[in-house]
Amino acid sequence: MCGIIGYVGSQDATRVILDGLKRVEYRGYDSAGIAIEAGGKLAVAKRSGKLTSLVTELAAHPLPASGHGIGHTRWATHGGPTDNNAHPHVSADGRVALVHNGIIENFAELRAELEARGITFISQTDTEAAAQLLALELAACDDLTQAMRLVCARLKGAFTLVALDAHDSERVVAARRDSPLVVGLGEGENFVASDVASFISYTREALELGQDQVVTITRSSVTVTDFAGNPVPTRRFHVDWSPAAAEKAGFDWFMRKEIFEQPRAVADTLLGRTTDDGRLVLDEVRIDAAELRLANKIVVVACGTAYYAGLVAKYAIEHWTRVPVEVELASEFRYRDPIVDSRTLCITISQSGETMDTLQAIRYARAQGARVIAICNTVGATIPRESDAVLYTRAGPEIGVASTKGFLTQVSATYLLGLYLAQVRGTMFADEISRWLGELGAIPDKIQQVLDQAERVYALADSLKTTQDFIFLGRHVGSAVALEGALKLKEIAYLHAEGFAAGELKHGPIAIIDETTPVFVVVPPTGAGQLHEKMVSNIQEVRARGASVVVLAERGDTSVLPYAEHVLELPITPVLLQPLTATVPLQLFACELATLLGNDVDQPRNLAKSVTVE
Ligand code: AGP
Image (cartoon, rainbow, N blue to C red; front, side):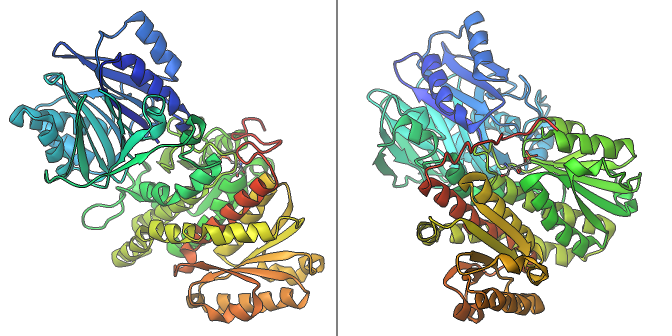
């Protein structure tokens, strides 16, 4: 997500901060900015676009010399990627500059409160509410650290904040809750940053911060407290990564890093979507409830991994809303004279928001009168711009060509949308919807439990590194997981892999199975009754043909053990949500196998991250 840096020292803060921002460019961003304090005043430069735009601006209008400043690269979430929405945000009284990473869930409420007190907002961001609030608290207590604590106590959501006070030439104050922040310890200078990459060329000594902590840095001191002001212990560490490794947080590939980011990415996608009384609110879905109630058909259009997210969505949305859902490959959609009219709701899914096949499909759907809701990860991209409404997935930039956190957050967003449609159309009771939201809320921890087994998956990849053909089987939503598992392996390991709905096997594909073919089976949870039983029979069918079987099964499911060479445990999850956990071992497996085969995992041959041609 966003890159953040704060600096206090004797070097030129603008140069040090720009340098730090360059080192976190890999995170992806759509605007950048710097604020420094000089002579009791703040000076700010910010620009949409790449850092070069900011550098050009600084060359034309240099900031005064200063050893005290903050900087930011922004990946837009609330408000488009404009100059005005770029960080730092300065309070209306001109005293505070603030940068932020994360999502402030209660920003609308705070903004309304501040506007009622006569404060005028100039951006569409959630961050500005925190900047204005910080200025009010600071005006009252005249202590940036104390003001930061008071603000943090009022914020809901996930955030890293870094602030500068025009009246204080000594301090930079930062705070974190559920978003990254580390301190860089220099000689006569100190840093705060979202990422060690930002300060690695100045110091390799660092402090790790815990959750809900506030840190104040000066040239010669670092003070850390909790939000109540109590001192807290910190852990000092030495960074021995190279600058290139630091960009990937120590991982060998962006893809692997992105797989491990999934608990946070899914949590961010779910954040702030409910009111205090448990009602689902999708503010971005600005299609009239009456129109949503009138829809008699839903068509999902997408490509590749996003299409597989759509296959999962079909099961969930039909189950919850009882509206028929068709899932279409965007590249086929408009060439087959599809039945689409003003009562069709089109859901389009795209990580990049720029895939040409998908874009043409939604243009076609809108021309037939359909309303289009985009599920997208990239704020301001063409597909959301050309849609009637958009639900952003908030995965943060996905750099690896093989989509991982993109998929999990797309699936999460389709669940939110399905539940929202059920709420609007009255097909579920409020308590059922909140029960599902509770199940979804537990998913980030469950993904982490799967990630904790990564070494077992890597050992499996090592044992299969000379294998040429792989089969993946699933039932129900698991059939989409099977397709996604096979796609990951094709994309980056360049191996033959096929995914099937397990019941289809006996209608043909079983002929290709022999003792050289490992078969990965996504076993439905035991609570899924018949689905589970049928899958156990399918496992026996492939075993009878000599295949070695890798099962992904719910913890405690002993029924599959007699037939499996390898077992990867999944946390207990309702079958509809199982893709959010079951996909993860398959991503890890593909990433590891491709690494063992010596392939370029992040930029596999013949593939582009965003396919902007038809
Ligand atoms: C996934 O690993 C692929 N690289 C690819 O299938 C991708 O999902 C597809 O091209 C759609 O991209 P989009 O989500 O950016 O539209």
